[in-house]
Image (cartoon, rainbow, N blue to C red):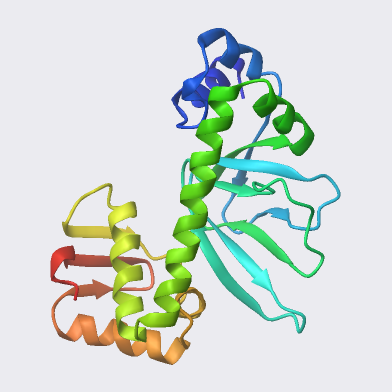
Length: 227
């Protein structure tokens, strides 16, 4: 990626927008930019070189692997989101996960963890902004766990679907068309349900005239009617 393109990406990112033009220019020399295609793996949690990642464009999913080798989709991430070693903690040897691209193309920006720690240490404004972004991410994770504990599976499914189409639909509320890049098993993992139940709920909403869906896309007639 050309330096000018790197500059404008960092300049426009909610994290780095607090830096001056000169600071952003200097920052362009540090990160690594990479483009990956659909189904390519981007990182493993146990990579020797720990890095912090942010997404320039595209969509990916974080997949968790348990001790028996069973895989569950843990999170869906989009442009601007952080992943990797974003908490600066030591790697949890019991945690095994990886990121894989689900859109046709994903462009990521990554920093070696030591490099990013030095950047944050030398830029108090950036440190404050980074703390807020990580806080928002952790709050979102907490809210997801709260939903799993206190809401029934249909409510969890509807909340997930509304969040998905609102983000993919860029704020539209009616006749939203989104690419259907998640399997019913993926969605089941995200809402702690089963593939059969997710299929049943999709069909229920379709029969009610609230959505239509195929293997390639989902159409939501009116997001406010999803209840």
